[in-house]
Image (cartoon, rainbow, N blue to C red; front, side, top):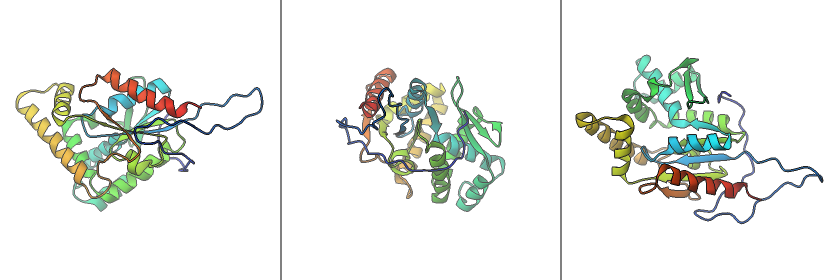
Length: 259
């Protein structure tokens, strides 16, 4: 299934209570002999770089049979096009014009999401350092974020999605069924990112510096700054393994599915 632009509609959803599992959930009554089909939830996972959002979102989506929508991949795709078309990262209106003339798709596959830019597979290219840095600069523009939010809402409106990013629970889907804010100590996040990219020496210092600068931009930007939603479950993964984080997230999700 290709996650692309569709029609947007808002469901009547009840927000979760911060850090408290819900005790009740409305269930539609069906005629005798019929069972209630499982609801397809909208799950929002936010947090800073290096907190493990992408890994947890991918694994959770696979277990639930949901689509994993990477909002960051969409910004990366636009940033790549800006690089290729020599569009300034500081020119918001020009970037939005470029976005309107682009087709960005997230296509699930067994090996993880494929990122398509104008029908071209750029899955590997958008993970490279220059695109990562460009995406962080492109994402600060309010008009760019407005365009992205509209596309993301269209893509996830039908439910059955796990969307990760930095403003999913606060801006993109403020009424998501499940909201999670995944965080970790900055030093631990830097170490994880260095291990992920397998870099050392001067390159490691550059990666760590870029992550700190990205944190600063994400938390201080005027539009949709990085903050937990008031009704999000906040998970600090500093001393948790990947499996332990996933177990806690699954328990929170299952509490929203239980009658």
